[in-house]
Amino acid sequence: MMLAGLLLAAAALLLAGCSPVEAPQMMEARGDQCVEPVEVIRRDHMTILKAEKDRAVNLGVRNPDHSIRGCVNCHVSPTASRDDPATHFCLNCHTFTAVRMDCFQCHADKPANEDYRHALNPHGPAHGFQLADSKSLARDMEAILALEGQEQ
Figure (cartoon, rainbow, N blue to C red):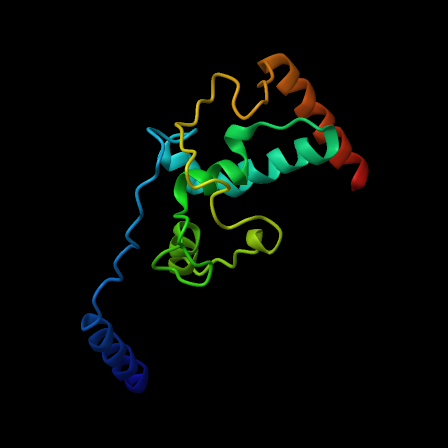
């Protein structure tokens, strides 16, 4: 019992000397505002991207505002290296949180066109795509959920 107490005291003493880990420095985005509130996008971006992928692949419906290309075009520097957390927006945070990221095995990790920058607009057409209305989005999501139910 005394040994356990000594070990606990030693661990507490060691931890007392540790400083808190600083959060990564987030690079400035190019757009005026994100397509979702920051706290939502930080927590749910993978869920949003997966749902958009399912809609695009299964139903052929694309929403450029919630695409990985839109994220990269707004947040990633054209000179960023996918291997350097100090320069790549996505890798910066994913390295800090120890999350493995495999998006860029298939997707481009740099903006498509360095000269073309715009604010993302969730309420209008962009890049030649017309956004669907809420009724068709709800119908598409029901179809995706039905497909997922059939797979199980």
